[in-house]
Each structure stands twice: as structure tokens, then as C-alpha cells.
Amino acid sequence: MKYRYIPALVMLAAGLVCCILSVVQGWPVQYSLITLLIVLIVFYIIGQIAAQIVGRVQAEHLAMVEAERKRREAEEQARREQEEREAMEAEEAEKQEVPEAEEANRNG
Image 1 (cartoon, rainbow, N blue to C red):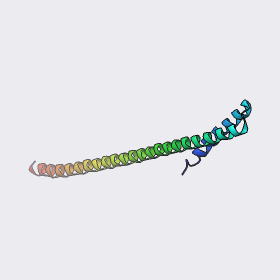
Image 2 (spheres, rainbow, N blue to C red):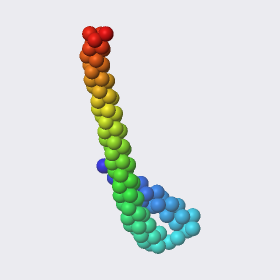
Image 3 (cartoon, rainbow, N blue to C red):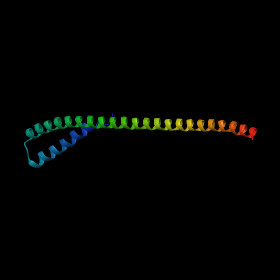
Image 4 (cartoon, helix red, strand yellow):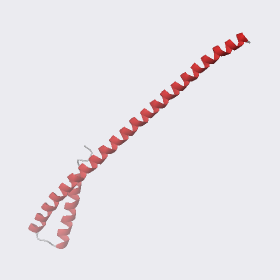
């Protein structure tokens, strides 16, 4: 799956921010580690949710594109069939005109 790295990236980015804040703020080590653990867990879950949403949206988009492609193919097929019917009708009309013209020549 293309989106399997999203949770890890989100989690690691949040962890980096948390580590930088703990160093800059001068937090005690035990407090920093507990905070880091909580941040990593929370942002891993957020990343999982984001990956599922992105995957679902991508799947819906692909399904929509496929449905549009099938619709266009069906329209193209219907247009071709219509053109074939019109061509056949034109040929039949020509065939009917030819005997009428021959009959008119015989009578004339």
C-alpha cells in the first residue's frame, strides 16, 4: 500500500517537535519521555486515520475515473451503432430509389 508510511512520518515529525520543545523548555528527562511517549501514540493514531482517509479518497477517485471511462466507451459504442444504422438506412433508401428510377425509365 502506498500510504503505509504516513503514520510513521506523522508520528516522527510530532516526536521531533516534542523533543525540540522539551530541550528548549528545559523539561526534566522523565517528564520529557512521558510526554514524548504520549505524543508518539496520539500522532500514530492520527496518522493511521489520515492514511485510511487518503486511501479511501484515492480508491473513490479511481472508481469514479473507471466509471467515467466505461460511460464514455458506452457512449462511443452507441454513437457507432447509430452511425451504422443511419448508413444502413441510407443504403436501403438508395436501393429503393434505384428500382423506382428503373421503373420510371421503363414507363417513360
